Amino acid sequence: MSNPIDFEALAQGLAAAGVAHSPSELQGVMAGLLATGHGGHDEEVMGVLAAHTDIDGGFDGALSVALLSLRDQLHEGFQGTGLDLALLLPGDEEELGLRVAAVAQWCEGFLVGFGTGSANTHDKDLSPGIQEALSDLAAISQVATPDDDGDEQEDMFEQVAEHCRMAALMIYTELVMRNQDKPAPAPQTPPTRH
Image 1 (tube, rainbow, N blue to C red):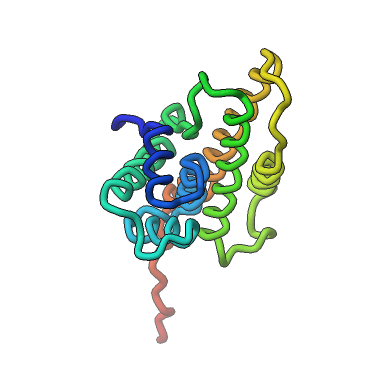
Image 2: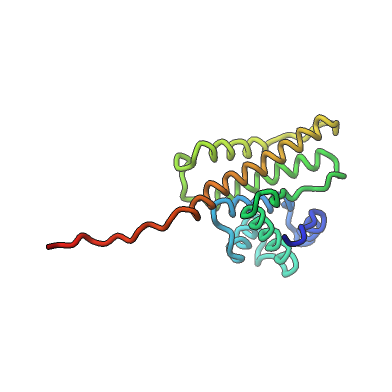
């Protein structure tokens, strides 16, 4: 796997470009898009990100390279064992409130990407497991930041972040991997008339 993208460096690049969205949110958008089987083409993912961030004319070269590298890492993480899939969050040295907000932003981004990639899909067409995972991510996107940084809150944060990661993996596995494993339909030959 390529070198992981640095949260702080990407945050600075986004801020310099006038993007008010966090790296976590943009990674979430890409993860949601990939979980629907979309976002594999550079133009597609960059167009979705530009529309989401209201950037006219797209991102500059270095920022585009960083975002596409982040997308590639996500794609590798989804396709591997799942252990390589990591949420792009501020480092553990940052205060808990900032990291909780980043997880909420990641979930919000995932829902945006998923909604974009599954625009023609109705809820009833999704399995109960996917519906529950999306509901969980929606609830987490609305979470309030904690008042203190105790060990108990830190443990809960780790559990919630892991739940988000596993929900994304489950959705990807069900929607993308299972469709790849299905055999192609046999060609239909018209009945022979005698």
